[in-house]
Structure formats: C-alpha cells, structure tokens
Length: 255
Image (cartoon, rainbow, N blue to C red; front, side):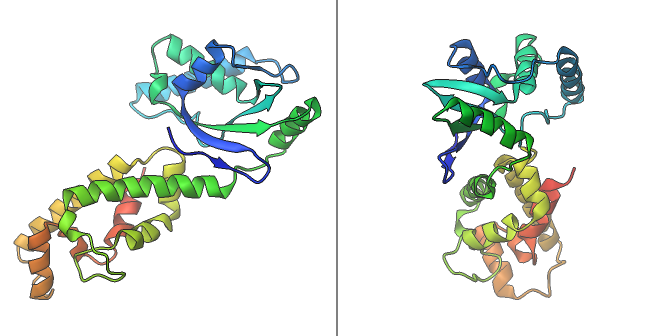
C-alpha cells in the first residue's frame, strides 16, 4: 500500500489495510504473544461503541492511526505485542458490516527479534512510550503532498514552473510542498488520516474557482496585467493570491 521505512535497528514501518491485517490473522501468520495481557472484553466493547458513534455521524474512525500495530518477527512467526484491543474492535466492526476493513489504513511496526527476551524487551519499550521515528511521518506527509500536487498539475498543467521562484500565478511544486509541509495543523491532519490528497485538491480547486470569479469581477485590477494574462492562459487563478498554499493547507486541516 505504501513504501516502508526501516530504522537502524531493522524495525520496519509500513502502511497496510485493515483487511490485510485480518488476512494475516485468518491465515495464522499472526498470533498473540503469550506474554501479552489478556483481552479486556469491556474495554473492547467501549472502544467499539465509540467508533460506531463516529461512523453513525458520518465521521472517520480515529482508532487505527497514527499509533502502530506492533508485531515481533520471531522464529518465522509474527507475534502481536501491541494493538490486540484495536484488532478485536476491527474484527468486530468488519464482521458486523459496520466498517469496510479494506478502507482502513494502519501503520504496522515489525520488530525483528532473535530471542524470546527481545520480544519481552519490545513489549517493555512500547509501554514506556518509545515513539515512531519522525522519518516515517515525514515520508507520509511528503507522499500525500506529492499526490496532491500531481492532481493539481493535471488540472492546470500550464501553471507548473521549473523556476525556483516563478512569476505569479505559476508555481514550483517543490516550493509549494515545502510551504505546506511546514504547517503543523496540516501535518497532524495527514498523520491522523483526516486529510487526503484528494481533499487538498478539492479545496485548492474550489478556491481557484472563487479566485477566478473575483478576477472576472474586476477586484484584482491592481495586479500587473501580465499576471492576469498568465492566469487566464493557465486557468490557475489561485496563484494570484499571496500565500495560497498555506491558506489551502490550513483550510483543509480545519475541523
């Protein structure tokens, strides 16, 4: 589903679907680690009800990202050491038809373990709050923004420029990506799976149409004629605004 990254200790982080995780369980490729805590049925029920309430309100689930499901690869087996309650909720929602597991995105963390003691150490580290490497989330944000810029370029290809500082309304993809990725609300929304490339494109194109109407109404007379002519040629009127990329990022990330 997405390229994975590998940390210096060999731990791998990879995006998978909930359906893929369920297939691992169904094929017996993934099993509970015997040293893990017993599943708490009441906790699973509470978690399930909270997700059903979100789904009933037309909102996405918030249970499966960004905290990873962590497994240990030990003696050719995958042992689930963290995420057993989330897995149980996923199984229940999928079984009852309340959630399409194919559309659920999960972060899977696979820790290589040479000995049983390494599995125990992994469990202790997780419960001590060892974070996911920032490199993984940097990669995730970049992937979404690159996909968004690809969608925008397909809609208005003539507005894309190779120049580091192109003349308005044209834009440089790398520059826009850097400006947008620096916005913490957008980064958080992408990491939490609340903002997709498609959502960013929808916002940008809607704002572009608003700007086109503004220009046609004569409200941008103070801009150089050359800028207005380029906007008419490329169809990308949004680039006439200063800071349009940041504005799109913050609007898309807004609740």
